[in-house]
Image (tube, rainbow, N blue to C red):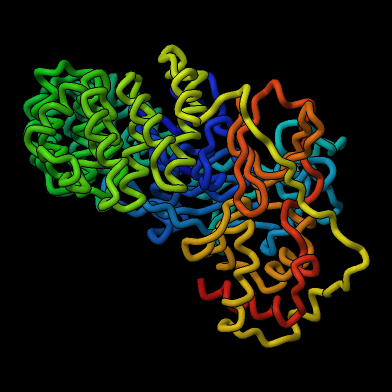
Length: 616
Protein backbone atom coordinates (compact mmCIF):
# COMPACT_ATOMS: atom_id res chain seq x y z
CA UNK A 1 0.00 0.00 0.00
CA UNK A 2 1.57 3.25 -1.15
CA UNK A 3 0.85 6.93 -0.89
CA UNK A 4 0.92 7.98 -4.54
CA UNK A 5 2.79 11.24 -4.91
CA UNK A 6 1.94 13.21 -8.03
CA UNK A 7 3.98 12.00 -11.05
CA UNK A 8 5.47 9.22 -8.90
CA UNK A 9 7.33 6.32 -10.50
CA UNK A 10 7.10 3.10 -8.48
CA UNK A 11 9.53 1.12 -10.63
CA UNK A 12 7.22 -1.37 -12.33
CA UNK A 13 9.79 -1.54 -15.13
CA UNK A 14 13.23 -0.11 -15.84
CA UNK A 15 13.35 3.50 -17.00
CA UNK A 16 13.45 2.41 -20.65
CA UNK A 17 10.47 0.10 -20.08
CA UNK A 18 12.41 -2.96 -21.21
CA UNK A 19 13.32 -4.87 -18.04
CA UNK A 20 11.46 -6.35 -15.10
CA UNK A 21 12.69 -5.98 -11.55
CA UNK A 22 14.14 -9.50 -11.58
CA UNK A 23 16.53 -8.53 -14.38
CA UNK A 24 17.72 -5.51 -12.40
CA UNK A 25 17.85 -7.04 -8.91
CA UNK A 26 21.27 -6.23 -7.51
CA UNK A 27 23.39 -8.44 -5.25
CA UNK A 28 22.28 -8.17 -1.64
CA UNK A 29 18.90 -6.59 -2.35
CA UNK A 30 15.85 -8.03 -0.65
CA UNK A 31 12.87 -8.85 -2.83
CA UNK A 32 10.91 -5.88 -1.46
CA UNK A 33 13.73 -3.42 -2.21
CA UNK A 34 14.42 -4.89 -5.65
CA UNK A 35 10.81 -5.29 -6.78
CA UNK A 36 10.00 -1.69 -5.85
CA UNK A 37 13.47 -0.46 -7.02
CA UNK A 38 13.96 1.40 -3.75
CA UNK A 39 17.71 1.83 -4.30
CA UNK A 40 17.19 3.57 -7.67
CA UNK A 41 17.10 7.34 -8.12
CA UNK A 42 13.79 8.57 -9.47
CA UNK A 43 11.66 5.99 -7.63
CA UNK A 44 9.14 7.01 -4.98
CA UNK A 45 9.14 5.44 -1.49
CA UNK A 46 7.07 2.26 -1.66
CA UNK A 47 5.13 2.57 1.59
CA UNK A 48 3.93 -0.65 3.22
CA UNK A 49 5.27 -3.63 1.25
CA UNK A 50 3.48 -6.50 2.99
CA UNK A 51 4.40 -9.31 0.60
CA UNK A 52 2.31 -11.59 -1.56
CA UNK A 53 -1.35 -10.85 -2.06
CA UNK A 54 -4.04 -9.79 -4.51
CA UNK A 55 -5.03 -6.18 -3.70
CA UNK A 56 -8.45 -4.97 -4.82
CA UNK A 57 -10.65 -2.03 -3.77
CA UNK A 58 -9.91 0.70 -1.27
CA UNK A 59 -11.50 3.78 0.22
CA UNK A 60 -10.48 6.76 2.33
CA UNK A 61 -12.84 7.41 5.22
CA UNK A 62 -13.37 11.14 5.82
CA UNK A 63 -16.65 11.25 7.76
CA UNK A 64 -19.59 9.06 8.56
CA UNK A 65 -21.08 6.66 11.08
CA UNK A 66 -17.85 5.16 12.41
CA UNK A 67 -17.02 8.25 14.44
CA UNK A 68 -14.08 10.61 14.81
CA UNK A 69 -11.61 7.88 15.83
CA UNK A 70 -11.77 6.45 12.30
CA UNK A 71 -11.59 9.77 10.49
CA UNK A 72 -8.65 9.81 8.08
CA UNK A 73 -8.44 6.00 7.83
CA UNK A 74 -7.48 4.34 4.57
CA UNK A 75 -9.10 0.93 4.11
CA UNK A 76 -7.60 -1.54 1.62
CA UNK A 77 -9.14 -4.86 0.59
CA UNK A 78 -6.73 -7.80 0.30
CA UNK A 79 -8.55 -11.01 -0.70
CA UNK A 80 -5.31 -12.97 -1.03
CA UNK A 81 -4.93 -12.66 2.74
CA UNK A 82 -8.65 -12.64 3.65
CA UNK A 83 -8.46 -9.19 5.19
CA UNK A 84 -9.38 -5.52 5.07
CA UNK A 85 -6.32 -3.53 6.13
CA UNK A 86 -6.67 -0.21 7.95
CA UNK A 87 -4.10 2.58 7.91
CA UNK A 88 -4.19 5.98 9.55
CA UNK A 89 -1.46 7.78 7.59
CA UNK A 90 0.84 9.97 9.68
CA UNK A 91 2.90 12.66 8.03
CA UNK A 92 6.57 11.74 8.08
CA UNK A 93 8.62 14.49 6.48
CA UNK A 94 7.29 15.09 2.99
CA UNK A 95 5.69 11.65 2.91
CA UNK A 96 3.56 9.46 5.13
CA UNK A 97 4.11 6.58 7.52
CA UNK A 98 1.69 3.72 6.89
CA UNK A 99 1.23 1.48 9.93
CA UNK A 100 -0.93 -1.49 8.97
CA UNK A 101 -3.49 -3.28 11.10
CA UNK A 102 -6.19 -5.83 10.35
CA UNK A 103 -9.59 -4.16 10.43
CA UNK A 104 -11.71 -7.11 9.28
CA UNK A 105 -10.48 -10.65 8.67
CA UNK A 106 -11.70 -14.23 8.62
CA UNK A 107 -8.19 -15.53 9.08
CA UNK A 108 -6.43 -13.93 12.08
CA UNK A 109 -3.87 -16.75 12.22
CA UNK A 110 -2.69 -15.98 8.68
CA UNK A 111 -3.08 -19.54 7.37
CA UNK A 112 -3.89 -18.39 3.85
CA UNK A 113 -4.69 -20.60 0.86
CA UNK A 114 -5.62 -20.42 -2.80
CA UNK A 115 -3.48 -17.37 -3.60
CA UNK A 116 -0.97 -17.09 -6.41
CA UNK A 117 1.86 -16.33 -3.98
CA UNK A 118 1.15 -19.64 -2.23
CA UNK A 119 1.05 -21.77 -5.36
CA UNK A 120 -2.45 -21.01 -6.62
CA UNK A 121 -4.66 -24.05 -7.09
CA UNK A 122 -2.10 -26.29 -5.40
CA UNK A 123 -2.71 -24.47 -2.11
CA UNK A 124 -6.53 -24.51 -2.16
CA UNK A 125 -8.25 -25.82 0.97
CA UNK A 126 -11.84 -26.12 2.17
CA UNK A 127 -11.16 -24.11 5.35
CA UNK A 128 -13.91 -21.53 5.72
CA UNK A 129 -11.43 -19.01 7.12
CA UNK A 130 -9.78 -18.84 3.67
CA UNK A 131 -12.96 -18.06 1.71
CA UNK A 132 -13.38 -14.36 2.60
CA UNK A 133 -12.38 -12.59 -0.62
CA UNK A 134 -13.14 -8.86 -0.26
CA UNK A 135 -13.27 -7.40 -3.75
CA UNK A 136 -14.18 -3.83 -2.85
CA UNK A 137 -14.98 -1.48 0.01
CA UNK A 138 -16.97 1.75 -0.02
CA UNK A 139 -18.49 4.31 2.32
CA UNK A 140 -22.24 4.52 1.85
CA UNK A 141 -24.34 7.70 1.95
CA UNK A 142 -25.51 6.56 5.40
CA UNK A 143 -21.90 6.70 6.61
CA UNK A 144 -21.46 2.95 7.07
CA UNK A 145 -18.75 0.88 5.41
CA UNK A 146 -19.81 -1.67 2.79
CA UNK A 147 -17.61 -4.63 1.86
CA UNK A 148 -18.28 -6.93 -1.10
CA UNK A 149 -17.11 -10.55 -0.79
CA UNK A 150 -17.09 -13.04 -3.68
CA UNK A 151 -16.48 -16.10 -1.43
CA UNK A 152 -14.13 -18.37 -3.37
CA UNK A 153 -11.36 -20.84 -2.43
CA UNK A 154 -9.18 -19.36 -5.21
CA UNK A 155 -7.92 -15.81 -5.79
CA UNK A 156 -5.34 -14.05 -7.91
CA UNK A 157 -7.03 -13.15 -11.17
CA UNK A 158 -6.23 -16.40 -12.94
CA UNK A 159 -9.01 -18.72 -11.82
CA UNK A 160 -12.20 -19.06 -9.79
CA UNK A 161 -13.59 -22.26 -8.31
CA UNK A 162 -17.01 -21.23 -6.95
CA UNK A 163 -19.49 -22.55 -9.53
CA UNK A 164 -22.37 -21.17 -7.45
CA UNK A 165 -21.06 -17.61 -8.01
CA UNK A 166 -22.03 -16.86 -4.43
CA UNK A 167 -21.16 -13.61 -2.72
CA UNK A 168 -22.17 -11.19 -0.02
CA UNK A 169 -22.14 -7.53 0.91
CA UNK A 170 -21.44 -6.72 4.55
CA UNK A 171 -22.34 -3.50 6.29
CA UNK A 172 -19.93 -2.37 9.01
CA UNK A 173 -21.32 0.17 11.49
CA UNK A 174 -21.58 0.77 15.25
CA UNK A 175 -24.01 -1.34 17.28
CA UNK A 176 -27.51 0.05 17.16
CA UNK A 177 -26.85 1.84 13.88
CA UNK A 178 -29.91 2.64 11.77
CA UNK A 179 -29.17 3.05 8.07
CA UNK A 180 -30.62 6.31 6.84
CA UNK A 181 -29.02 8.40 4.11
CA UNK A 182 -29.62 12.15 4.55
CA UNK A 183 -32.19 13.39 2.08
CA UNK A 184 -31.28 16.37 -0.08
CA UNK A 185 -32.83 18.42 -2.84
CA UNK A 186 -30.27 18.91 -5.64
CA UNK A 187 -32.28 21.83 -7.00
CA UNK A 188 -31.40 23.99 -3.98
CA UNK A 189 -28.13 25.38 -2.64
CA UNK A 190 -28.88 23.89 0.77
CA UNK A 191 -29.46 20.46 -0.75
CA UNK A 192 -26.25 20.59 -2.77
CA UNK A 193 -24.25 21.59 0.33
CA UNK A 194 -25.77 18.61 2.16
CA UNK A 195 -24.62 16.39 -0.72
CA UNK A 196 -21.12 17.91 -0.62
CA UNK A 197 -20.88 16.93 3.06
CA UNK A 198 -21.80 13.30 2.30
CA UNK A 199 -19.50 10.46 3.41
CA UNK A 200 -20.05 8.82 0.00
CA UNK A 201 -17.81 10.04 -2.80
CA UNK A 202 -20.50 9.59 -5.47
CA UNK A 203 -23.01 11.68 -3.53
CA UNK A 204 -20.60 14.49 -2.75
CA UNK A 205 -19.69 14.58 -6.44
CA UNK A 206 -23.33 15.51 -7.11
CA UNK A 207 -22.95 18.35 -4.64
CA UNK A 208 -19.59 19.49 -6.03
CA UNK A 209 -20.71 19.58 -9.65
CA UNK A 210 -24.08 21.11 -8.82
CA UNK A 211 -22.53 23.92 -6.78
CA UNK A 212 -19.84 24.49 -9.38
CA UNK A 213 -22.57 25.00 -11.99
CA UNK A 214 -24.15 27.70 -9.79
CA UNK A 215 -20.95 29.74 -9.99
CA UNK A 216 -20.87 32.98 -8.01
CA UNK A 217 -24.29 32.29 -6.51
CA UNK A 218 -22.86 29.33 -4.57
CA UNK A 219 -19.86 31.13 -3.05
CA UNK A 220 -21.42 32.14 0.26
CA UNK A 221 -22.95 28.70 0.87
CA UNK A 222 -19.70 26.89 0.13
CA UNK A 223 -17.57 29.37 2.09
CA UNK A 224 -19.60 28.54 5.18
CA UNK A 225 -17.95 25.10 5.18
CA UNK A 226 -14.50 26.64 5.72
CA UNK A 227 -15.31 26.76 9.45
CA UNK A 228 -16.42 23.12 9.66
CA UNK A 229 -14.64 21.19 12.47
CA UNK A 230 -13.87 18.37 10.00
CA UNK A 231 -10.71 19.20 8.03
CA UNK A 232 -11.81 17.02 5.11
CA UNK A 233 -15.01 19.02 4.66
CA UNK A 234 -12.99 22.24 4.87
CA UNK A 235 -10.78 20.80 2.13
CA UNK A 236 -13.79 20.02 -0.08
CA UNK A 237 -14.89 23.63 0.27
CA UNK A 238 -11.40 24.89 -0.56
CA UNK A 239 -11.19 22.92 -3.81
CA UNK A 240 -14.68 23.98 -4.86
CA UNK A 241 -14.24 27.68 -4.07
CA UNK A 242 -11.25 27.86 -6.39
CA UNK A 243 -13.57 26.61 -9.16
CA UNK A 244 -16.10 29.38 -8.49
CA UNK A 245 -14.23 32.30 -10.00
CA UNK A 246 -12.51 35.34 -8.47
CA UNK A 247 -15.04 35.78 -5.66
CA UNK A 248 -14.72 32.13 -4.63
CA UNK A 249 -10.93 32.33 -4.72
CA UNK A 250 -11.01 35.47 -2.60
CA UNK A 251 -13.22 33.79 0.02
CA UNK A 252 -10.98 30.71 0.06
CA UNK A 253 -7.85 32.77 0.64
CA UNK A 254 -4.40 32.42 -0.89
CA UNK A 255 -2.41 29.28 0.01
CA UNK A 256 0.21 31.21 1.96
CA UNK A 257 -2.47 32.75 4.21
CA UNK A 258 -3.76 29.40 5.52
CA UNK A 259 -2.80 28.56 9.12
CA UNK A 260 -2.72 24.77 8.80
CA UNK A 261 -0.15 23.05 6.54
CA UNK A 262 -2.86 20.71 5.23
CA UNK A 263 -4.96 23.68 4.14
CA UNK A 264 -1.95 25.38 2.54
CA UNK A 265 -1.49 22.19 0.53
CA UNK A 266 -5.20 22.01 -0.33
CA UNK A 267 -5.29 25.65 -1.44
CA UNK A 268 -2.13 25.28 -3.52
CA UNK A 269 -3.49 22.18 -5.23
CA UNK A 270 -6.80 23.95 -5.77
CA UNK A 271 -5.00 26.84 -7.47
CA UNK A 272 -3.31 24.43 -9.83
CA UNK A 273 -6.55 22.56 -10.60
CA UNK A 274 -8.12 25.93 -11.44
CA UNK A 275 -5.25 26.56 -13.90
CA UNK A 276 -4.10 29.66 -12.02
CA UNK A 277 -0.51 30.91 -12.06
CA UNK A 278 1.11 29.67 -8.84
CA UNK A 279 4.57 31.18 -9.42
CA UNK A 280 4.32 34.05 -6.93
CA UNK A 281 2.86 31.83 -4.22
CA UNK A 282 5.44 29.12 -4.97
CA UNK A 283 8.28 31.54 -4.25
CA UNK A 284 6.91 31.97 -0.73
CA UNK A 285 5.88 28.37 -0.06
CA UNK A 286 9.22 26.97 -1.25
CA UNK A 287 10.53 28.27 2.09
CA UNK A 288 7.60 26.93 4.13
CA UNK A 289 8.44 25.23 7.42
CA UNK A 290 6.36 22.18 6.50
CA UNK A 291 8.08 19.65 4.19
CA UNK A 292 4.73 18.53 2.78
CA UNK A 293 4.05 22.04 1.54
CA UNK A 294 7.53 22.22 -0.02
CA UNK A 295 6.88 18.87 -1.69
CA UNK A 296 3.82 20.27 -3.45
CA UNK A 297 5.76 23.31 -4.63
CA UNK A 298 8.58 21.16 -6.01
CA UNK A 299 6.18 18.88 -7.88
CA UNK A 300 4.44 21.86 -9.46
CA UNK A 301 7.72 22.92 -11.08
CA UNK A 302 7.93 19.77 -13.23
CA UNK A 303 6.57 21.42 -16.37
CA UNK A 304 7.77 24.94 -15.69
CA UNK A 305 10.66 26.48 -17.67
CA UNK A 306 14.11 26.74 -16.06
CA UNK A 307 13.91 30.49 -15.51
CA UNK A 308 10.82 30.00 -13.34
CA UNK A 309 11.64 26.69 -11.70
CA UNK A 310 15.33 26.90 -10.77
CA UNK A 311 15.15 29.58 -8.02
CA UNK A 312 12.13 27.86 -6.49
CA UNK A 313 13.65 24.37 -6.62
CA UNK A 314 16.90 25.72 -5.17
CA UNK A 315 14.95 27.04 -2.17
CA UNK A 316 13.32 23.62 -1.71
CA UNK A 317 16.74 21.92 -2.00
CA UNK A 318 18.29 24.17 0.66
CA UNK A 319 15.79 22.75 3.14
CA UNK A 320 16.42 19.07 2.35
CA UNK A 321 17.61 17.38 5.55
CA UNK A 322 19.60 14.59 3.92
CA UNK A 323 17.18 11.87 5.05
CA UNK A 324 13.67 12.56 3.72
CA UNK A 325 13.33 10.46 0.55
CA UNK A 326 9.89 11.85 -0.28
CA UNK A 327 11.27 15.39 -0.16
CA UNK A 328 14.21 14.35 -2.33
CA UNK A 329 12.01 12.58 -4.87
CA UNK A 330 9.69 15.58 -5.13
CA UNK A 331 12.72 17.80 -5.75
CA UNK A 332 14.01 15.47 -8.47
CA UNK A 333 10.58 15.20 -10.06
CA UNK A 334 10.24 18.97 -10.15
CA UNK A 335 13.64 19.14 -11.86
CA UNK A 336 12.60 16.82 -14.72
CA UNK A 337 14.32 18.03 -17.88
CA UNK A 338 16.26 20.60 -15.84
CA UNK A 339 18.49 18.30 -13.81
CA UNK A 340 21.77 19.60 -15.23
CA UNK A 341 20.90 23.25 -14.66
CA UNK A 342 19.71 22.58 -11.09
CA UNK A 343 22.84 20.55 -10.31
CA UNK A 344 25.05 23.42 -11.47
CA UNK A 345 23.20 25.89 -9.23
CA UNK A 346 23.24 23.62 -6.19
CA UNK A 347 26.83 22.47 -6.69
CA UNK A 348 28.05 26.05 -6.58
CA UNK A 349 26.14 26.75 -3.37
CA UNK A 350 25.78 23.47 -1.47
CA UNK A 351 28.58 21.35 -2.89
CA UNK A 352 32.28 21.56 -2.09
CA UNK A 353 35.35 21.71 -4.30
CA UNK A 354 36.39 18.39 -2.79
CA UNK A 355 33.64 15.81 -3.46
CA UNK A 356 34.71 13.92 -0.34
CA UNK A 357 33.64 16.95 1.71
CA UNK A 358 30.08 16.96 0.39
CA UNK A 359 27.34 17.00 3.00
CA UNK A 360 25.05 13.98 3.14
CA UNK A 361 22.25 16.19 1.84
CA UNK A 362 24.16 17.27 -1.26
CA UNK A 363 25.47 13.74 -1.87
CA UNK A 364 21.87 12.52 -1.93
CA UNK A 365 20.88 15.34 -4.29
CA UNK A 366 23.74 14.42 -6.65
CA UNK A 367 22.55 10.79 -6.54
CA UNK A 368 18.96 11.78 -7.36
CA UNK A 369 19.88 14.14 -10.21
CA UNK A 370 22.68 11.82 -11.52
CA UNK A 371 23.81 14.21 -14.24
CA UNK A 372 26.88 13.69 -16.49
CA UNK A 373 28.57 16.72 -14.89
CA UNK A 374 28.68 14.83 -11.58
CA UNK A 375 30.34 11.67 -12.95
CA UNK A 376 33.94 12.51 -12.02
CA UNK A 377 32.97 13.61 -8.50
CA UNK A 378 30.84 10.50 -7.97
CA UNK A 379 33.71 8.31 -9.18
CA UNK A 380 36.02 9.90 -6.59
CA UNK A 381 33.49 9.24 -3.85
CA UNK A 382 33.00 5.63 -4.93
CA UNK A 383 36.77 5.05 -4.78
CA UNK A 384 37.35 6.84 -1.45
CA UNK A 385 38.29 4.53 1.47
CA UNK A 386 37.53 7.28 3.99
CA UNK A 387 33.82 7.22 3.11
CA UNK A 388 31.50 4.55 4.46
CA UNK A 389 30.55 1.56 2.33
CA UNK A 390 27.00 2.93 2.03
CA UNK A 391 28.24 6.32 0.83
CA UNK A 392 30.53 4.68 -1.72
CA UNK A 393 27.82 2.33 -2.93
CA UNK A 394 25.39 5.23 -3.35
CA UNK A 395 27.92 7.09 -5.49
CA UNK A 396 28.46 3.92 -7.54
CA UNK A 397 24.72 3.46 -8.04
CA UNK A 398 24.40 7.07 -9.22
CA UNK A 399 27.14 6.43 -11.80
CA UNK A 400 25.14 3.48 -13.12
CA UNK A 401 22.27 5.80 -14.01
CA UNK A 402 24.43 8.25 -15.97
CA UNK A 403 24.59 7.57 -19.70
CA UNK A 404 28.09 8.89 -20.35
CA UNK A 405 31.41 7.30 -21.18
CA UNK A 406 32.96 8.97 -18.13
CA UNK A 407 30.46 7.12 -15.93
CA UNK A 408 30.90 3.73 -17.61
CA UNK A 409 34.70 4.10 -17.56
CA UNK A 410 34.59 4.92 -13.84
CA UNK A 411 32.47 1.82 -13.22
CA UNK A 412 35.01 -0.33 -15.07
CA UNK A 413 37.72 1.10 -12.80
CA UNK A 414 35.66 0.16 -9.75
CA UNK A 415 35.09 -3.36 -11.10
CA UNK A 416 38.85 -3.66 -11.44
CA UNK A 417 40.11 -2.13 -8.19
CA UNK A 418 37.38 -1.61 -5.57
CA UNK A 419 37.43 -3.80 -2.44
CA UNK A 420 35.44 -7.07 -2.36
CA UNK A 421 31.69 -6.30 -2.10
CA UNK A 422 32.03 -3.04 -4.02
CA UNK A 423 34.01 -4.75 -6.78
CA UNK A 424 31.31 -7.39 -7.18
CA UNK A 425 28.62 -4.69 -7.27
CA UNK A 426 30.56 -2.68 -9.87
CA UNK A 427 31.09 -5.81 -11.97
CA UNK A 428 27.37 -6.50 -11.78
CA UNK A 429 26.59 -2.97 -12.95
CA UNK A 430 29.01 -3.14 -15.88
CA UNK A 431 27.59 -6.46 -17.06
CA UNK A 432 24.01 -5.27 -16.56
CA UNK A 433 24.55 -2.07 -18.52
CA UNK A 434 26.34 -3.81 -21.41
CA UNK A 435 22.98 -4.68 -22.95
CA UNK A 436 21.12 -1.43 -22.28
CA UNK A 437 22.24 2.08 -21.29
CA UNK A 438 25.94 1.54 -22.05
CA UNK A 439 25.51 -0.79 -25.03
CA UNK A 440 27.19 1.69 -27.39
CA UNK A 441 30.13 2.51 -25.09
CA UNK A 442 32.35 -0.25 -26.48
CA UNK A 443 33.18 -1.69 -23.06
CA UNK A 444 33.75 -5.36 -23.89
CA UNK A 445 37.36 -5.00 -25.19
CA UNK A 446 38.26 -3.03 -22.04
CA UNK A 447 36.66 -5.64 -19.81
CA UNK A 448 38.78 -8.30 -21.51
CA UNK A 449 42.06 -6.41 -21.18
CA UNK A 450 41.34 -5.48 -17.55
CA UNK A 451 40.60 -9.11 -16.68
CA UNK A 452 37.04 -8.35 -15.59
CA UNK A 453 35.11 -10.40 -18.12
CA UNK A 454 36.16 -12.28 -21.24
CA UNK A 455 33.46 -14.70 -22.43
CA UNK A 456 36.07 -16.77 -24.26
CA UNK A 457 38.37 -17.16 -21.26
CA UNK A 458 35.98 -17.65 -18.33
CA UNK A 459 36.97 -20.51 -16.03
CA UNK A 460 34.02 -22.13 -14.28
CA UNK A 461 33.80 -24.67 -11.47
CA UNK A 462 31.06 -26.98 -10.25
CA UNK A 463 29.18 -25.84 -7.15
CA UNK A 464 26.49 -28.20 -5.89
CA UNK A 465 24.47 -28.00 -2.68
CA UNK A 466 24.54 -31.45 -1.03
CA UNK A 467 21.34 -33.47 -1.31
CA UNK A 468 19.54 -34.28 1.97
CA UNK A 469 20.99 -37.43 3.56
CA UNK A 470 18.25 -39.77 4.83
CA UNK A 471 20.77 -41.63 7.00
CA UNK A 472 21.32 -38.59 9.23
CA UNK A 473 19.36 -38.38 12.49
CA UNK A 474 16.23 -36.24 12.29
CA UNK A 475 15.37 -33.53 14.79
CA UNK A 476 11.71 -32.85 15.51
CA UNK A 477 10.47 -29.30 15.89
CA UNK A 478 8.84 -30.27 19.18
CA UNK A 479 12.18 -31.48 20.57
CA UNK A 480 13.70 -28.05 19.92
CA UNK A 481 10.75 -26.15 21.39
CA UNK A 482 11.01 -28.17 24.61
CA UNK A 483 14.56 -26.88 25.25
CA UNK A 484 15.85 -23.68 26.83
CA UNK A 485 18.01 -21.81 24.34
CA UNK A 486 21.05 -19.76 25.36
CA UNK A 487 21.86 -16.79 23.13
CA UNK A 488 25.54 -16.78 24.14
CA UNK A 489 25.98 -20.32 22.84
CA UNK A 490 23.88 -19.50 19.79
CA UNK A 491 26.37 -16.82 18.79
CA UNK A 492 28.93 -19.58 18.24
CA UNK A 493 26.44 -21.75 16.37
CA UNK A 494 25.47 -18.99 13.93
CA UNK A 495 28.95 -19.07 12.38
CA UNK A 496 27.87 -22.20 10.49
CA UNK A 497 25.04 -20.20 8.91
CA UNK A 498 27.40 -17.65 7.37
CA UNK A 499 28.15 -19.95 4.45
CA UNK A 500 24.82 -18.75 3.06
CA UNK A 501 23.55 -15.91 5.25
CA UNK A 502 24.88 -12.50 6.22
CA UNK A 503 24.69 -11.50 9.88
CA UNK A 504 26.51 -8.84 11.88
CA UNK A 505 28.21 -7.62 8.71
CA UNK A 506 29.74 -11.01 7.84
CA UNK A 507 28.74 -13.99 5.72
CA UNK A 508 27.56 -14.78 2.21
CA UNK A 509 24.37 -13.47 0.63
CA UNK A 510 22.89 -16.68 -0.77
CA UNK A 511 19.89 -16.62 1.59
CA UNK A 512 18.10 -13.82 3.45
CA UNK A 513 20.16 -11.71 5.86
CA UNK A 514 19.60 -12.92 9.43
CA UNK A 515 19.74 -9.54 11.19
CA UNK A 516 16.12 -8.90 12.16
CA UNK A 517 14.90 -12.01 10.35
CA UNK A 518 13.54 -13.70 13.51
CA UNK A 519 11.58 -10.69 14.71
CA UNK A 520 7.85 -11.28 14.59
CA UNK A 521 8.25 -15.02 13.95
CA UNK A 522 7.28 -17.75 16.40
CA UNK A 523 9.89 -20.21 17.66
CA UNK A 524 8.00 -22.92 15.76
CA UNK A 525 8.35 -21.05 12.46
CA UNK A 526 12.06 -20.39 13.05
CA UNK A 527 12.75 -23.99 14.07
CA UNK A 528 10.90 -25.33 11.03
CA UNK A 529 12.94 -23.11 8.71
CA UNK A 530 16.19 -24.43 10.20
CA UNK A 531 15.19 -28.09 10.45
CA UNK A 532 13.19 -28.35 7.21
CA UNK A 533 14.55 -25.72 4.78
CA UNK A 534 12.67 -27.28 1.86
CA UNK A 535 9.29 -26.76 3.57
CA UNK A 536 9.09 -23.08 2.64
CA UNK A 537 11.71 -21.29 0.55
CA UNK A 538 11.96 -17.55 1.16
CA UNK A 539 10.48 -15.49 -1.68
CA UNK A 540 13.24 -14.40 -4.04
CA UNK A 541 15.76 -16.94 -2.77
CA UNK A 542 14.84 -19.97 -4.84
CA UNK A 543 17.87 -21.75 -6.25
CA UNK A 544 18.85 -22.24 -9.88
CA UNK A 545 20.76 -25.11 -11.46
CA UNK A 546 22.94 -24.28 -14.46
CA UNK A 547 24.43 -27.08 -16.54
CA UNK A 548 27.27 -26.02 -18.80
CA UNK A 549 28.24 -27.24 -22.24
CA UNK A 550 31.34 -28.88 -20.76
CA UNK A 551 29.41 -30.88 -18.16
CA UNK A 552 29.66 -28.71 -15.04
CA UNK A 553 26.76 -28.23 -12.62
CA UNK A 554 26.45 -24.93 -10.80
CA UNK A 555 23.76 -24.41 -8.18
CA UNK A 556 23.12 -21.14 -6.42
CA UNK A 557 21.22 -17.89 -6.27
CA UNK A 558 20.94 -16.22 -9.65
CA UNK A 559 21.96 -12.59 -9.11
CA UNK A 560 21.99 -11.41 -12.72
CA UNK A 561 19.85 -12.37 -15.69
CA UNK A 562 20.76 -11.92 -19.36
CA UNK A 563 24.10 -12.53 -21.02
CA UNK A 564 26.16 -13.25 -19.02
CA UNK A 565 24.44 -14.78 -16.02
CA UNK A 566 25.85 -14.26 -12.54
CA UNK A 567 25.24 -16.93 -9.90
CA UNK A 568 26.31 -17.01 -6.25
CA UNK A 569 26.80 -20.40 -4.61
CA UNK A 570 27.34 -21.62 -1.06
CA UNK A 571 30.22 -19.83 0.60
CA UNK A 572 29.59 -16.70 -1.44
CA UNK A 573 31.41 -17.94 -4.55
CA UNK A 574 30.17 -15.85 -7.49
CA UNK A 575 30.64 -16.99 -11.08
CA UNK A 576 29.96 -15.24 -14.38
CA UNK A 577 28.51 -17.64 -16.94
CA UNK A 578 28.40 -16.63 -20.64
CA UNK A 579 25.14 -17.55 -22.32
CA UNK A 580 26.92 -19.71 -24.89
CA UNK A 581 28.29 -21.90 -22.07
CA UNK A 582 24.80 -22.78 -20.76
CA UNK A 583 23.31 -26.04 -21.98
CA UNK A 584 20.40 -26.11 -19.51
CA UNK A 585 18.97 -24.03 -16.73
CA UNK A 586 16.19 -24.88 -14.28
CA UNK A 587 14.71 -23.82 -10.98
CA UNK A 588 15.68 -26.02 -8.06
CA UNK A 589 12.83 -27.87 -6.36
CA UNK A 590 14.66 -27.85 -3.04
CA UNK A 591 16.31 -25.19 -0.93
CA UNK A 592 19.91 -24.07 -1.32
CA UNK A 593 20.13 -24.28 2.46
CA UNK A 594 21.36 -27.42 4.17
CA UNK A 595 19.31 -28.76 7.06
CA UNK A 596 20.38 -28.63 10.69
CA UNK A 597 21.28 -32.31 10.52
CA UNK A 598 23.52 -31.74 7.49
CA UNK A 599 25.27 -28.93 9.37
CA UNK A 600 25.86 -31.23 12.33
CA UNK A 601 23.56 -29.33 14.69
CA UNK A 602 21.83 -30.90 17.68
CA UNK A 603 18.40 -29.96 19.00
CA UNK A 604 20.14 -27.89 21.70
CA UNK A 605 22.22 -26.10 19.05
CA UNK A 606 19.05 -25.14 17.21
CA UNK A 607 17.40 -23.90 20.41
CA UNK A 608 20.50 -21.81 21.17
CA UNK A 609 20.55 -20.47 17.61
CA UNK A 610 16.90 -19.39 17.89
CA UNK A 611 17.65 -17.59 21.15
CA UNK A 612 20.55 -15.74 19.51
CA UNK A 613 18.60 -14.79 16.39
CA UNK A 614 15.93 -13.25 18.60
CA UNK A 615 18.55 -10.78 19.89
CA UNK A 616 19.42 -9.51 16.41
